[in-house]
Length: 162
Length: 195
Image (tube, each protein chain N blue to C red):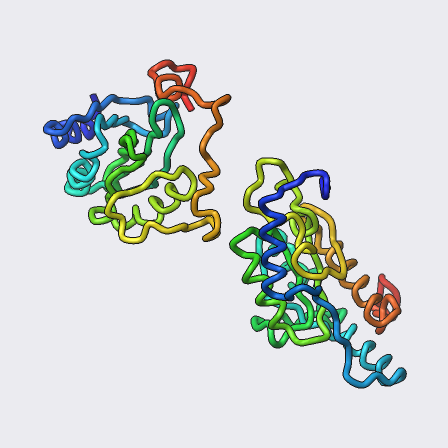
């Protein structure tokens, strides 16, 4: 296991997070963190902040049974980039990480625009990129025909690298 | 470019609503001068055609070509259209250079309404003409042609159009305004090209 992934695993050992190492050349990040319940995301963000990580982006992926919110973090001092995969809860919501990483503010609003994910306790959960009249448009949600399961998209199989 | 073949009812309703808010029931139209004297009008039009003041208004990649047109190599200034003004109130030409999306549309209408008469519009590039590559069924955000919002005088197709194409659009506009293609003919090499 990579040295920095090991440090990360130690810091997040108290949280229900599955950490697996990934092929950086193929995936573009060194480690994948799958969060079991989205309620732990704030605590995980806090842990990452204390390890000097900065936020790359927040986005989402519409899969069955739940939308997966994706966060990417990296560090300036060493080359270590991580992806966090966090399923939404039954209300299609995830706690915000704005109080920890201010940079997540706009990314979370954008994710709300495109996927309809509500970020609980976000200071300004309003349309960001879309027009005010498209508040409930959610243009990036997949239709039934092309909706795939989380397993297919994020499974360990190498044929689904993207 | 796919115009009228794709029906996007949600956007149609949006553009209609926006037009209604700005123009009421009617359409935007050129009210023309208060006094119309034939010879004076001809002279005025002649001057206007040779002194177009475009707005500094770039929306997408077409704006890069518009900037290139204004720079030294192509140099719109040779035809009297060099003063890009950052205020709509000082302009008489709006070059819609790029994709107009739903969020930009109200701002575009405001800018057009702020321009004093007489004013002209060039729709530059396929996006501004008809939605271009965005004229597809899945489109939810791009206005299918700026002529659904404001009256357009000259269409310059291309993706993006080369500066030469924009120059041609400018000549077309000058022709439309004054009735002649080059109101002030250019003579770039008085002593021949090899001198």
